[in-house]
Length: 477
Image (cartoon, rainbow, N blue to C red; front, top):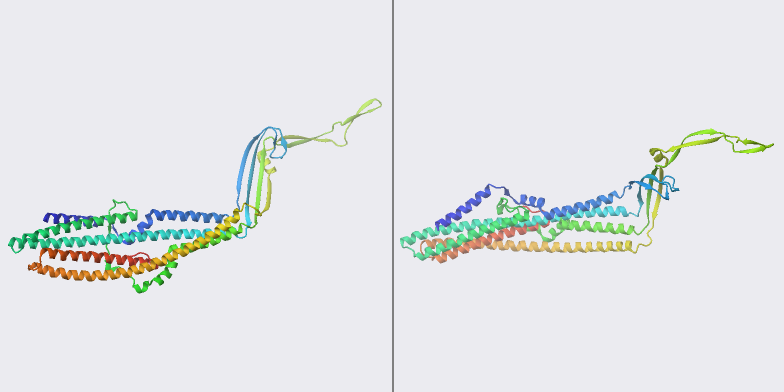
């Protein structure tokens, strides 16, 4: 039995020594790490950035568009010369350039409302990131407090083993002296075995709770890990007078990211309705185009000369005489037109206005407008539902806090009574006025009372922190 006690004590000491050499984690560090590494938060952040890109796209729609193009073609057979727009049967190689674009001038505020809708949607998406981070923080805080509770249970179990071992040593001496029957020693040995098993169970529960916390942190299970145990009596807790449910609810409506996100989504839907309504009316746009072309068969005059050649003959008295014009003819010589000369000569420009009047599009615009109004109604209903759920959660949380406080106070009184009973029982046992069985029962009652008090205390602290969280103070120990 001494060997068993020694082995258990060594295991506990080695575990604490190993933990002391590793990095220590408090709640703030746990929450910060989880917010930075949690996959759900990363996914929400990616979605928010996608929404932000849509906002950027809508803003860019305010600026003129421009697109450039060029193409080369080998033409043969009957085709149109791109430089003259005339039919030709000559085989030729051509190349064309163009620059064109346009700008929306007026569309009844559709573009402006689309930008505003995208802006509110982006803000709502980032509020969703905050909500996800808050949810993760609550989960981490719950696991963190569970780790603290199981760690305290180990300490209680160690004390229990030590007390039973001390009683066993005293009983052994009395048995050897003949003052007590051997049965008392056997009963205490059995109790020590039970206490040792409880210690191992507490250590196992602690290891499992640490693994759960690591999972919530997205931390590798093999990473050395130890939580910092704050003193529960030093954890700041607000007075219940400052956490009345109606006052907390009014604050939560303005601080909770879900409520902020709902409000922003409603605003985005309202702007989207206005934008879709504008699509039912005409829109005015401006457009422009610049173009030029090259043809490898194009010719241009390279020189000229004056000649005076007869245009016919007349016969006078049987003799033929040549007839010349009064002015000489100009004869031109031609050569291929240069590449850049053609581009300059064939350069064309155009600007214009375009009025688009929606007359009939199979009801698509009208249906889209009606759908956006229903989406707005749905967001409004969702906001009402979320507010009702928030209010119910806050009132439930407040009731749980009051109940947890009452249970903690009752368990504290139970520990005090159990401790007095154990102290009296120990004294009676020492003088032989109490059986070993009754002593063990009294000791077990004290251990049970202490464990229940510990659980109630951590339960009360967490429920208080949850109520403070709804108030907008975050999670802190």
